[in-house]
Image (cartoon, rainbow, N blue to C red):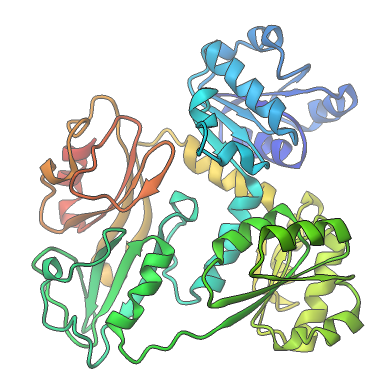
Amino acid sequence: MKIIIIGAGEVGHNLCTTLAAAGHDVSLIEQSAERCEQLDEEQNARIINGNGSSARQLVEANVDQCDAFLAMTSDDRTNVISCSLAKGLGAKNTIARIHDETYSDNSVINYQLHFGIDLLVNPEAICAVELAKEIRNAGRVAVENFARGQIEVQQQRVAAGSRLTGKHLKALKLDPQVRIGYIQRDGKTEVAGADSVLEEGDVVTLFGHPEALFTLRERFDPKHKTELSRVVLFGGSETAISLIRLLTNPRFKIRVIDKDLEKCRALAERFPNITVIHGDGTSLRLLEEEQIGSADYFVACTKDDEENILTCLQAAKLGTNHVQLLINKGDYDQLLGILKTVLGIEVVVSPRQATAEFMVRNLSAESSATLAKVPGGGGQIIELRIKHSSPCVGKKIKDIQLPAGAVFVALLHKFKAKVPGAEDVILAGDRVVVIVNEAQEKAVMASLI
């Protein structure tokens, strides 16, 4: 695959290394001549000193022949303009890195559609999804995170007294944003179907919008009580803002500590339901005064890696139950495992690594990918790319006859992801996530791709 990357910062540099190592034909355009000279010696890629938002430069780089154009500079406008030009000049697939939420706000205009950009990527938001996984549901199933956090996977046990016991799934009238994928009973697993019946003790795996899944807990377990989670965020960064949005449910009590007074005021106005503390989070005295040791989660997510590591160590020492860390620079890549195992930091995420992994998945030329195995050998969860030649293009979900032992659990359009409903139409370029018994996998492939 021919790939052009704009910008050789932490994210662009790491993407270049990752994609070139994967065998792609990579060209990297960077404005700094000094940076280009350095990269030319270490990268197995074509390094071009130039302006990625210049149409002439893009033509000279043969943008019309590239399969993927990735604008990864730290400036949103440069990325948007570069991708729009690249699309107009013939690039097949354009992806822009963005920070400003303006470009994600479609209330007035869909920026992505207007500028012809295939995908907007926010590295900080990707990291926030990873951090939020454990906070929102520590018992979630370890399935590859698809749909950028818009769809989550959770397990629920059918408890004694649940009114769901003895009922067929088609009679449950679940939230349309939720789909039951498979049911585990007595060590065996079956892919859920409309006629499946729930029994007490069953472990049910559900796919759906995070908040829709949460509201279902009491239906599975009438005695379930919602417990408050106290979350402390060190730093009012873009990652913190994305994380606050993911934890909007009142069951999360959020405090943010930041030493920038103006940033504190802006956060307090923007999110009136959280507590904002103006102070130095690296101060042990401040952490003690704020009783950080009694918090359920402490997340260090400033732009300063050294301060993040220091505060995580202090929070762990003070007794915080769960500590999470954001690492920005590549210098610490070799230490991520040590930070988790030796220092007791449960979750460590890196924007550059998270973005690289996300891109590799999205740029894969494979028409299918296995996301996870169903426990007990009951099948697997697969993601399929819908080609223009697919027999299901233009059909409604209700008109696609999947074999018994297969069920749709997610539909990913270019601009959104959801649990598919009967009236949803499959379009070329969509991705669908299906749970299927291994015996039926070939039949599913034939009907969808």
